[in-house]
Image (cartoon, rainbow, N blue to C red; front, side, top):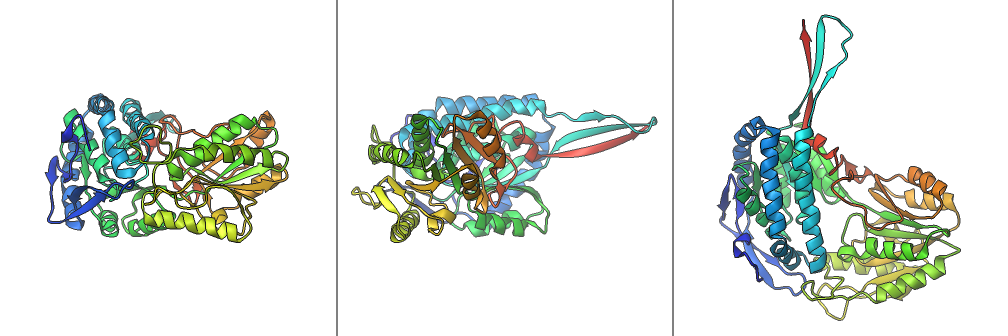
Length: 481
């Protein structure tokens, strides 16, 4: 791995402003070729407790600083992230696998949350309320919740950290973060840059380790952690909720998805195919908001399927560090096995394979970009999130049919629809049981919009003006005159 600044590459955890090696290590590998990139500190419950010990007093001091003061530190952090974007993208691609161009996009996207919440820190305001009694004055204060625990996934190893940590730090909180064991190097590089920006010791602690259940349980069991924020599977989210119940922690959970993408017969076909490609194949389909089920109205079904298959067949697959590559590898063998299982189940039940459908000739965990038609609701892919480059096309008759099929899921994170009918745009957007609806576009996420789901897709919102509220408590003050 060639970096302009090799000091960004850390292999030890970051606790209380220092680098902690621990007694054992675990290997981080490049999913594109299986090569070991680094041996990283393998820490556990004891180090989590030490990080909390450091975070508690550090948070109290940090909260006493003015919002402007905190914002200035965060602005320096943002500037450093952008100045080192090239190196951060190389680290990200090497440990996660996504194409370098996508990685650079993630760095800018991730940095935008630092910039946004640096400004939002200065807009945290309480209220003076109208009093029902002449001899009282009623006020509300917004105060930081305290120390929070964060557990982040491997698919966006920069953005999923900044989207959680930036609002918390801006609000005056401190964090103990456990990054995914597949992608710890990006997290540690962020910590290096935060330290250079002047973030005090103890405010951002990063504990790397293979024993995720033990680390998560320690965070949840400690009363001093007042909030948990997690992105990952619904199954793990439920476990964290149960483990946090005794200490009644505030929870932010961004969990599983099963995103529908609806294409109506009045849609702009060029726009719909482009949007479906952007949504489905970004990061090799390994995003929680990828279009998992593509519903196409029967009048344009064949035309849409043909054009989507042609575009899919043209995708360039390979090592993310190679120029021109548009799809990298799947993160690991388990992810590859699930994709194969979904495709085999669909074909076995009557689905038609238009392109792809098997592991790529490159070997390893590469999988061919795939398009399946004649999908039905009894197939595994209808219920389960594939998390891979498989576009599955279902046919629908009318608007009510499309809405019913889309909502037939325990998940409710993101949905997409393509239509040129303004009235339908509003009707369908309101009827879809999802926290996010993207209309006539395959990409919607930014620091300005609130990100989060309904039903089993989680609790709370990240990003936007609402995101910082997840790290604040409202205190009501009644003053007798």
